[in-house]
Amino acid sequence: MSRFLPLLVLAIIAAILPSGQVFAEQTTAPAEPGLRILILGGTGFIGPWEVKAAQERGHTVTLFNRGKTRPDLFPDIETLKGDRDPDKDEGLSALEGRTFDVVIDNSGYYPRHVKASAELLAPSVRQYIYISSISAYAKTDVENQDVDAPLAVMDDPTLETMGENYEYYGALKALCEQAAQTAMPGRVAVVRPGFIVGPGDTSHRFTYWPVRVRQGGEMAVPGSPEDPVQIIDVRDLTEWIITLAEQNTTGVFNGCGPEGRLTMGKVVETARAVTGSDAVFTYLGTGWDETHPDVAFPIWTPYEGEYKGFHTFSNARSVASGLTFRPLADTITATLESFDGLPEDKRAAALERIPVAGEAELIAAAKAAGE
Image 1 (cartoon, one colour):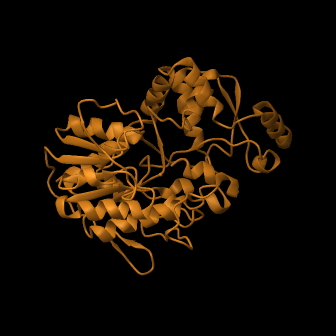
Image 2 (cartoon, rainbow, N blue to C red):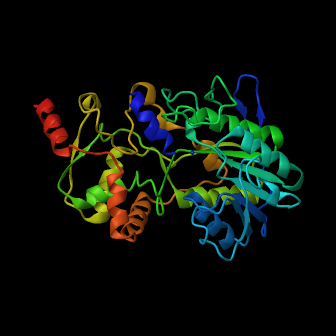
Image 3 (tube, helix red, strand yellow):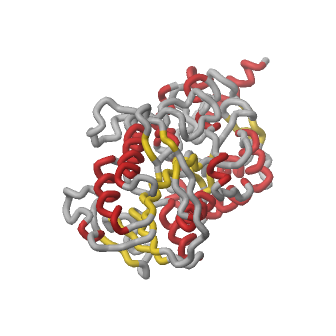
């Protein structure tokens, strides 16, 4: 099962007790208009949606990044150029002497970098929102884990590499959380998203499912229709992040959706309804991944063993703090519209990156096993 790990971490990106658990307290103030929001990053997947949500609600946004990813995306927004590594090039010097109400850290992957930015900005900001990951948890074999579940650890916390198979990604995210919380105790909101989906997703992991369903015909679906799936629309996530900023909410939160239990069957059936497709679903059950190790379906993970709890994290605390969810059909429609708006070569390249092959063989094997 460990071969699913790289797919999971690619999915995704208070006070610390001695046990490593996080004591999460939620402090809320009235919504505040006209915030000065600094976004570290801002031009990837979630950043532009944060900018949109913030501007629509009357806030002023400043970006800080290297200027390498879509540098012309926001010509009318102040963009400070620098590097998260304080020892590289101009480092964080562009932030010196600046004052903001809220910092949203989308691009912190190594604790030394997060420590540097949080310590520099601590005297001149009210709140630091760090975007972590569900991968920060130590295990995913337990269902319904909340924010006090044990976090991943690594032998050498100074290591600055994700590892060959991203095996250090989760532990590094946990260390980044701690770096921010140590620099700004009581002023940090940590958001741990799972699979972020919707319009603009360059990973196209979720995109595979509505696109494949729209193609119609008999299609293979891993596991069973009851297997849980947790996804969150990027628009829901980012609108809630701005709500956390407006309410000055601190603590630790699982940024997962939807509010109730979503299943793999519901995902493909909703996609069929949205697209009017004639798709017929053949569920592969368990064991197919052992006989076909070259096949990997995106988003889905086995609802058993070490991954049984992966798609079941509790989001009750997040919902209580204002996280809401649009209908799944809305997400599917927007995902397809975003995909269809890409040039033809980019659409083809996007689907080629999803390592799904041998569908007919899988379907035949599943039917033979059921006879």
